[in-house]
Length: 261
Image 1: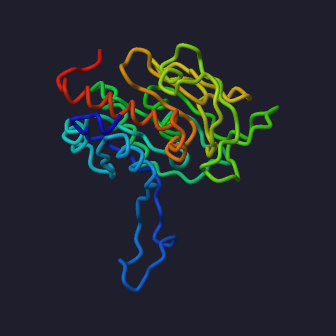
Image 2 (image 1 turned 60 degrees about the horizontal axis):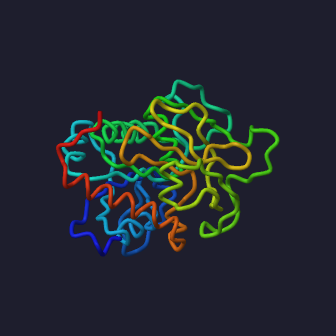
């Protein structure tokens, strides 16, 4: 699809992985160790292959978010660590992973502004959770607390390997984009949707009932998947998620004054 586009939309990609200076290995030729942001190249490669121009969004002052968002045609909310539970008024679970509260609040503002502007959104793994919290939802903080499930939501296998099934709601936008109602996915998450945010609908589930896909039926393109689709783009159905985001973003660029109700 990317080759057929005459316009290449600019798609912002959030990056949530923070690395402390102590975890950065210095080389004789490199910069001194310091706190860094990290984002897997698979996101950018998937978006570029689909015909978009990916732009990594670093944390910045609130006043810069509006001018930045006015230049973008779509958003990809990427994966990463646990979300700060205070963002949805919950106390931290004793098994909560490392969090970055400042970065969480910045990315929540980006997600909310994307929704306010009616920008196309593809949310992946933590990105789905961020989208849900941005819409007023809550999260399960520690999935292993769920009883009666033999699904391993943090797989030991490589990210290119699908390990469990997902059932999608017939007639949903996610099912239409993937062209499937049943598929196998990879799984690398510690948290998941508990209560859905306003306007969002669950449209995909793991066999144990964990929400694996959401969408906003009132918007042209707001989709979230709990698996890491960027690591599975050698499969046509997974590549289609990025192609459809690029296509929706291209249409957004042609109608820049259109704002969702």
